[in-house]
Length: 379
Image (cartoon, rainbow, N blue to C red):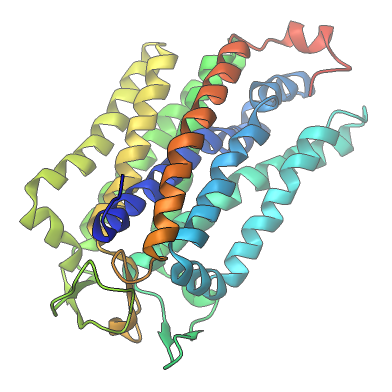
């Protein structure tokens, strides 16, 4: 089966989106649990209960993170090179924060010392809270445009600064991302715990769910006034990638253009609202598994809204709009996309199958009694 080049470009835009959503849902609830750890757990036993809800599978969920980064590298090499060089310090901050997770999970309970354990509790908090905050800030900057340009050899040059990334709209997007992940993690904690931890997690669900709804709504309103990007020249989706072979204009409201020309795309932000509201209502009624599914749908809608708003742009440039990278001109060759597509068809079902099996095996409530009985083997 041979798939034409334009269709493959669109397929890989969708697949990268699926990987990002999979990362937010699967690794996201681990990070949300880590963010809540110092606040929901009031003593050592409670914190060990919280850690053991995600301890057995957090590292398996990192597959989505690694695969997402690898897919961007292979499918969108120009995006990978430009974004990772421009966001260099931000990406390092994510990596530094993630360093706390494996060490924290593995060594936190090895020494029965309050100071030692408290230190790693806060380390797990950093590893859970910082990455979604930075990823949200990064998305906020993508929507505003990133200051970069290409020379005649397509060498990218980033002209911004780390502190320039921390602008008001980007910080709002960071709040939305952090609230979304913490909300998701709190629902998971409700599903896996009982008693006081369950009740405190329920409070966190209501708090961060409300913050997510408010932040997502404010970002949507604000986005209408931010100059977006639109391609003003004719572009051939089947042409070989050339990011400089187009004309791009910036205008207020451009990010709403897809919703105006393709009304069906409004289903994506509506899905976000429906998923978040349904998760809140279901969590309030104690239907935690259904709430987790609804929260996952809400996450899909939130991330999908950013993707649909920007399409076909992936990495717009604020200093050289014509150099903005799109779905059509920042991709790998036809052969590379084809090979990766069939590899994905083989391995994606395997990942989903073993992840589903692992969660089924490790389902059920984690209790204080379990932690006490397995003090030397539990996290």
